[in-house]
Image (cartoon, rainbow, N blue to C red):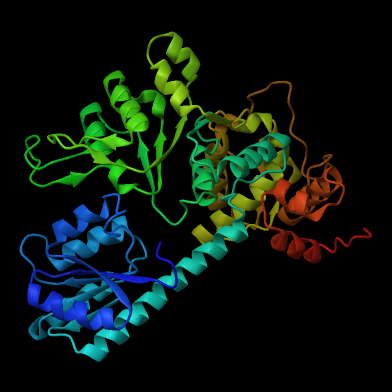
Length: 466
């Protein structure tokens, strides 16, 4: 991220004369001008360390529409993927204005006709940078409002411990190993760690190691050069390069094959990667966060996972409790998820019956929060009223325990409110009691900002005296 008192622009144009003119105008206006003569060169420079040329973090990109090789539209799409929020201004000949307008519909910030008018060039680039700074400020405010918790909902002791570890480990550079069953929210924890880190303005790149074949996983991680194998028609940077300066999240790391584990270990130790087909190592600056639902210690003992890699990854372990071990979070989770799903499906649910919540609390939740979200979305879609009741739940919720009889709708259930607002209010009261009415600790325990807690207290009439 460029400092607000230093502004830099990447100019991509295959015409040296026009680049020289643009440089003179923009340097006179206080810009630091970075140049590339092709789209390929621009992308190559963007994935390098950047300590010498600074090309890793321009405020604005000025891109010629017509260039040999990768054209301006193709470069626009690549930049949108690799540098989200980077304003791209297109340079086009007078007769190709229609193409530039089409590009703006696909996300370009603006366009200029060549040769660019000096004053218009200054005005448009200034406006683009102001837009970039606004996006960055909005992102900062959102992070502060969320306190880095990324919707990791719950007031239980286990969830509070996870949030505490995120707050402690986030600003560090340590590798983190997230452990937990499928559906517990490992990706949310990884996002929380990234957002609370000093790398928050840089990319968070995610790779599911179980979703890709072994040979494809290697090329995705480390990239390849043109001609490295059949079908490699051009260079492709790997996820390590795309995450340069940011965070790389390796989900399902326990599924990674042994040969690839050795290459990953070298990348972690030496901070370099070797793209397939290349003899030139590429330096990387990446923080690694890994996650697995396997017992990696058992995998090490069985010889399926490298011990040295395990200890390299597990500098800090964050273990997420399964939903069955934090059932007290169910009312809060149900309230949160139904609001989210209601907005998604254009359907409001204001009430859940006591029997509905009671049935949920007696289920074992093998799929954890992901399963809960699917179950609630199903019930919401099937409901013909603004209330949810047990008959809307799938078959596995009925008759799984012969000794269990769910409460009737009119039976009071201790600690089980009938409305979503009552569930939220009860969770806040419980958190206040457990934290001695201390507002900041209560907000942290609930996973919300203090400002949000203040709003909720006022909404539910929970004064200090009460």
